[in-house]
Image (cartoon, rainbow, N blue to C red):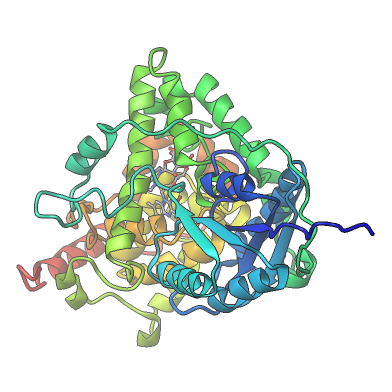
Length: 464
Ligand code: FAD
């Protein structure tokens, strides 16, 4: 009589904002524990998890298709499920008879609550459940100021953070045998992540190739070719002077440890560029640390005295609704801002300098609530992330952590002269520039500046 041994319990690696196979501690731990399958859950139901915007959904579709290919190459099938994580993950584990569950940590409030619930349910049903650090260089609860609270100012935060040594990135795991029991999943097409009619995604597909393969190539190319000139070129939206890694970092196609390592290897050849670039990674960390400590970052002014600022909001009605629309579609009459807004609508990305100028015009000259701008970016950016987006909007509005002082109101015309002196950028995005088809400026810069400063001066002082 022949007796076959029962199939070993598979391990699960639960993928979230870490869609890669290199430098993935949870994937390695799962594969060390035995045959592994990967799970991705589209969770639009757990409280406090922000539903993805349109451009992000487009990115996610292609990213999952690429991740599936990468995982297949190491013997790990990818299972897609939809629903609240606290119900879906334990159910998939039970169906597969899984013995262990691994994931890399997330830092948003709703995400942390969902993860804690999954961990508790998993452990109470006898599953080994473990989480790892992979998406930030430093855990937010470990890096605090002298009083034990979060850093409020970037410079001391960065000084402290960058004085640490970080681990070396981990290679992709060796291929192994596919597990015998893999639960059924949804088809990617069933999720309807791609736009239907109208399909606005063609320029996105021209601009980007989501997935970990492109991310690592882009990182190496940038580090070899552009890092040396980064300090200077990063302020020129008409030039390819920045890395364009933001969506790849946002979706975790590349880890911050991999970026840190690649930059560190060029420190000798490009000392200025590496230091400037590393500190941008520092801003990303700073934004995530703020979100960890303030889970309502997208809704509530960090400086509460700004609660009294008379920003216009949609329910107020009036002319501002039209101004908001002109800003969204790049018809404000200020070329740098309009070029940026059109770049965003077309490609799902906008240069950082232009994001700052565009945000300043909206919240200061047009007097529109920063939350409306933040929501527009959330819907249209391929790199929209729950920390960097609200953090930077609060920075631009003057109400955030280490924010741009309110009285520093960018003049979009002066900014254009300084950062796009030859008009390379504005002409690329505004073909009708200089013709009667291009609109007049939608606001008087001087008057609106004075009004904003008056409103700022009238805020109550000293509220923590
Ligand atoms: P690089 O100059 O090559 O920088 C390298 C990396 O550093 C970036 O990929 C990014 O991960 C990080 N980084 C750079 N600047 C910042 C910053 N100010 N804050 C946080 N991280 C930074 N970035 C996002 O990733 N997601 C967002 O949703 C987002 N929303 C923004 C909204 C506003 C109003 C503003 C002013 C900025 C926003 N940023 C956001 C930050 C920044 O504009 C983008 O990260 C940057 O333009 C990405 O281009 P890059 O990868 O070529 O940058």
